[in-house]
Structure formats: C-alpha cells, structure tokens
Image (cartoon, rainbow, N blue to C red):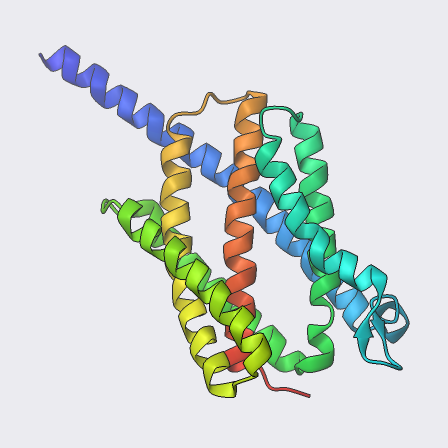
Length: 240
C-alpha cells in the first residue's frame, strides 16, 4: 500500500512539475506578445506621420489600413482557433506575432485620446491586477468552471451593451460597461489560468502539440490582459 501511495504521489509531483513548465511557456509567449504590442503601439502612437496611415486627420475617419488593423485580428484569432490541428507550431507562432503587431497598430490611437502618464499608470495597475488574479487562479483548489461559464455569458451581454451604447452615446452606460468589463476580465484571468494549469498536467512535454496548446493559452491570457487594460483605461485614463 505504501509503495502504491508513493507511486501515486510521485506521479502527482511529476504532473505538477510538467504543468509549471507548460504554464511558464504560456506566460513567456504572452509576455512577448504584450511587449510586441506595446512597442508597436508606442512607436506609432507617438509619430504623427505613422498615425496618418491609419487615421485621416482631415476627416477624422479611419483609413483602409486602419480598418484592416482593427478587424484583421478577429480573423487571426479565428484562424488560430480553427487551425490548431492543421497548422504547424511555427505557423501558429507567426500568426500570433502578426496578431500582436496588428493589435499594437490599432491601439496606437490611445495616445491621441489619453495622456501618456495615465496610459503608463493603467498599464501598471493592469499588470498588478492580472498578476494577482493569475496567481490566484493557478493555486486555488476551488473549481472555477461554473464561474467561468457565467463570466462568458456576461461577456456576451457586455458586447451587446457596447453595440447598443455605440448608438446611444450614453456616458453613464459607458461607465457602467467599463466597470463590469473590469470585473469580467479580472475573473476570466483566474478562470483561464486554472484551465491552463489543468491542460499543462495532461500535455506531453517537448512535442509540437504542447507548443501549439501553449500558444493558444498565451492568446487567451493576452486577450484577458488587453481587454482588462482597455476597460481600466476607460475608467482611469485622463483624456487629452
């Protein structure tokens, strides 16, 4: 009996070690993508000649390139999700990098709307909040599956509300949406991190499949981080 228990304990320890390695890989990909987005966003957002490629300053409207930068990332997310079984890990990585660059291009306009100081402060607050919730999600023993399902449904509700408010232009509704958005993506960070930990306990290390799953996990956390940042910026940001 003791031998059997030792074998089980050894297997559990091994699974946790593999999960930590996998999670570290996920966070590395995510951090690199955030860095790419940040650099691209800053370089474009602080150079009016570059911003001219995505915004027509005479009319104030988005250019064709601007619309591509805004809409193409959605297509790339769908492409990654549907291509996990078909694409190589290298192709998946290339798509993820392109996605990060395009998000950086589309986010560059925040430098026209918000002060530099408030952008930096919001990024710092987002990083702290994300780190706390990711740590909580990784180490908690509470099953967050049902919690995650509720948050996903709430996210759909927020998207609908944002579309409605695009026509209504209500400042109060925008504030409420931003508050709820912060709560949703704070919770989703913990839920998604727990899901990644569980996936990490089942993957086979050193395989292409592991790399592709790590990239999908990184994409999920990246989206949590970016959306949390944007909702916080709408609440905390000082407008120019």
